[in-house]
Image (cartoon, rainbow, N blue to C red; front, side):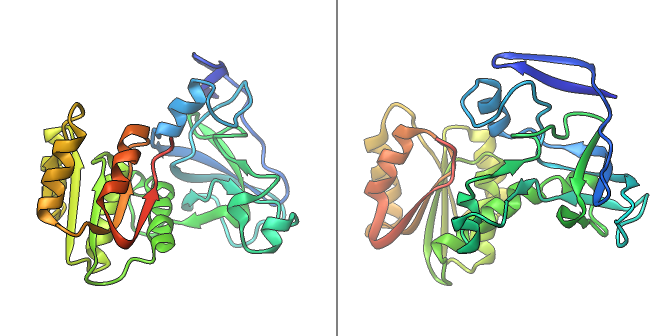
Length: 262
């Protein structure tokens, strides 16, 4: 099959690579859609936990091409997406319901070959039917799940005032989730006017231009909207200088979430 390979940091190739074969409890998926995540760039730059060579790609959907002998509830032709995170279930953190700290963590497209290729293999327990979603919509399952997890960590309550820094895909998903959580005020800040226009379309109460060179002015503008600060401030940029300035905007007793990978 054809695939994108990272043979080493700062290097990629489009080349032939062996088609993976499913084990008895595995599913072989023909890729139909795969997102490009900022994590893929971190991996490319050698800044993440990945080992090389690697086929990246962890936000994906596709059609079942083959199933293992012990797979009963999934059949060839099913339209599916996959939970890419793999936990051991045996370490101290897994046994205490803290799987994200798993000592033996693996991830499709991060620590093992992923979906920047024609096919990928996943264990049957990680495969989910996408029902009437399109393949492109279903490829957002992984990043949307991350955004939902972030808001669960915050414990967002109805009536809260929420500020999101960054109007990229992650920030826009967090914006929509905050609106669905019945926040009374949702503000988003970004230095890109096109992204801010999209944020307005998606329901932002205020879409504020953030000047990269003047964080003090940005704080003044944002505190003019919410003089006591915000109940929840979320950074979806991964930029240290943004995160440092977020703390000035959290209301007393409020919460700050670092969502972007710093």
